[in-house]
Figure 1 (cartoon, rainbow, N blue to C red):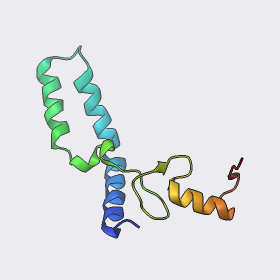
Figure 2 (cartoon, helix red, strand yellow):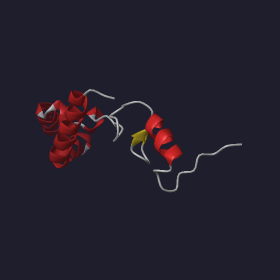
Figure 3 (cartoon, rainbow, N blue to C red):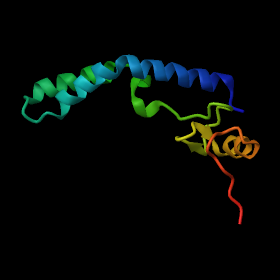
Figure 4 (cartoon, rainbow, N blue to C red):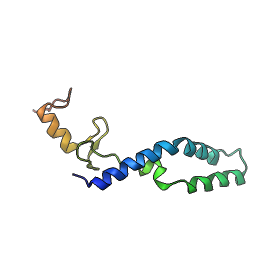
Length: 101
C-alpha cells in the first residue's frame, strides 16, 4: 500500500497536467518551429520553463487504482500485477482467465 501523500501528490499532478496541456503544447510548437526567428523561439522556451514543473506530463506516475503501487503496473487494467492476480483469481475482473497447463 502506497503512502496516501504519494497518491494525493500524483492526483495533483494530473490536474496540473490537464490544466496546462494546451499552453504547453502551443509553446512547444513554437520552440520546435525552425521557420521562426531564434529570439522568438528562445522567448517561448523561457515561458515554457516558467510553467510549473508538475505540469509536465512525464512527471505523472502510473499507479494502481486499488493500492497505489507504482511498480508492476498494467495499463490495460490500471492496476498492479499483485492486485491483478488476486482479483483475477477471485473472478472479479471480467474476461480475465487464469491460465494453467
